[in-house]
Image (cartoon, rainbow over all chains, first blue to last red; front, top):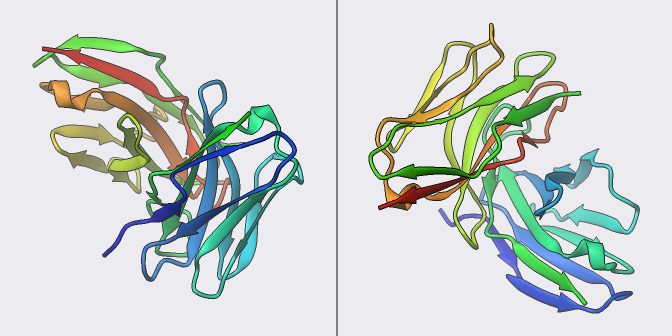
Length: 114
Length: 113
C-alpha cells in the first residue's frame, strides 16, 4: 500500500498570502489529522477529520481551516499568512475511527513565510 | 487534559551503548502509547506501540513497556548504532484527548561511531 502522501513538499509564501496543503491518506483510512511542527512549540494538533466531518480541533486561530473529501483526501488552508506560520505541517491517517490505533504520517510540507 | 513528558535532549552516546529515554504520561482513561522516530527531513515513523497496561512494544531492538502504576513508557535499546541518530517522540492517544495524538517534546539522540 502507498503511504500517506503530502503535496507539495516545500512552499515559500509571502506574508498575507494564503496557502492550501494537500494530504492523501493510506487507502482505506478514513481518519485524517493535521499537525504543525516548529522548533519552539514541538508538535501541535490542528484538527482531525473522519468521514468528511471535523471531530476535533486544536487551539489555532480561525485562519487555519481544513476539509475532507468523500475519498478521504484532505486539504488544509491557512489564510493571511504570518511569519510565525513557518513550520513543517504533517498529515496523519488512521485506519479506524478510534484513537487507540497508530497514526501513519506523511513526510510533511515545509512552509516558509517570508 | 492528557499530556506526555519526556526527557530533554540531546542525548549523545557512543555506538553499542545502552539507551534509555524516559517518558511519563498523564491521562484519564486507558490510552494507547507510542514511540515515533523522526529522521532529518522526514515525517514521523511509528517505532513501537502498546495498547494496554503491561504490554511490551518492540521493534528493531527497541523496547518499551506500558507501566500504568508509574504512568511510564520508557524507551530502551541495548546497543545503539549510528543509524539510530534521530529525534524520538513519546505519544499517546485514545484517552480523554480522543482522536488526537498528544506528543512529548521529543528527544534528539546522537550516536557517535
